Image 1 (tube, helix red, strand yellow):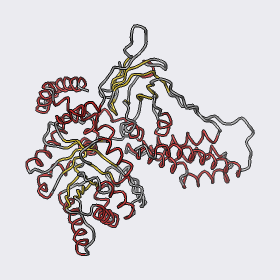
Image 2: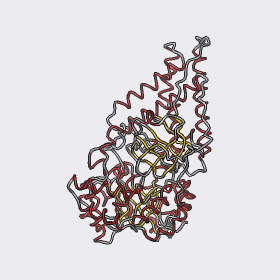
Image 3: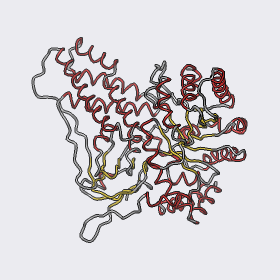
Image 4: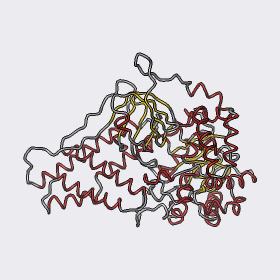
Length: 556
């Protein structure tokens, strides 16, 4: 039995298939000395890679996996980056290098630049570039790794998988993914969470314990992988489990409200299928068309649903770059982000606000300001939004029936000062991912620091409770998003901190609701949660946490 970091909940049993990517080898045929030949061959290889990525992207176009599409499009852009191609062309024509060598040198130069960065997400981009380079070289050398076909329920295992490879390997018979390495906030992790199957990362000694052909049970709730239970005749089987649909009747016993996150019009079908009562977070920074008309077209279908929606203004900065601007400096987790980025780009903020006011005509609009740092910063954002609303009113332009404003608390200073500006908030949201990394100075993109990313720490939960208590005392609605909200154990603890709404990905909504409903009917779960949240001493607290973790797993 091995343990790793659970990324997506669920349980599955299957036959292990180990995926090992074979490196492309150079051709044994004579290589022409003509630089035109090398340049043409390089461009043709990139075009073939682009066609392959685009074909995969097209298969996902109607599969409610818009983020996966965005990642594939990013790989296409990296493959034919202007600076990379310029360096490669110069090496071919001026230094006499072969096309594959010139392209490799240019790409690895960017890899080295990113790897020198201290921020974890840059190191992840370096890994993405290596993946792109590998795929282009396979086409350059005419080498295509055969995609395996799974004829029975299969648990896909690998040292690590890059997002493009992972999507290539996805088949109906693939019931779980288990990796020896991987960052919990990488592109691979983001794609994995959309697959709807158990995913576990950072399982050491995996290859030694479970070779190809063996059968394993995978528990995505606890991060456990073990030898599959077998009948006496040696055949493996899947434990019969109630379907999520059959558990929906238990949702009335939820300890808190659960809503879902969306990122664009592709998520409407998923939202409807989830049955969620509200959209707790509309992540607008993933919109492809950010013109005023493009935004109106993206927002209107959601307002037409007639459900509560919280729309976060563009959260650009760090690893989420704006599509219409060039960054003067390398992005940083502590740099120009969120509301401070919008303040530096007033035309972008005005365009988005106009689009939201128009799209929400006659409806209730909830606007969330990202990365609020101080009460004064929040007040500035609200004043700008209200000023624009008055302008539309004076001109008799379409506008919402009512507009609510609230901060997204991701910075500890905003959390500690919340009492000072709570009365100016119609609602408040808590972003646990960034709040945790800033609270403990732990870069959530750095796989080397994954062990330090403890969201269940009593001091961190205490900070969240401070915000919730302040809001609850004033009857201000509280929404919590981030990985904590989607994980059964941390979600159960969050629901015990006060009156809150958890906003989670649509793919986990039904499972999480069923899980929380069962836990809310368990006296053991309720008692352990209360005692754990009241405990601060490390040793007794750890004992209670272990006991609660076991109870949560039993109710999965």
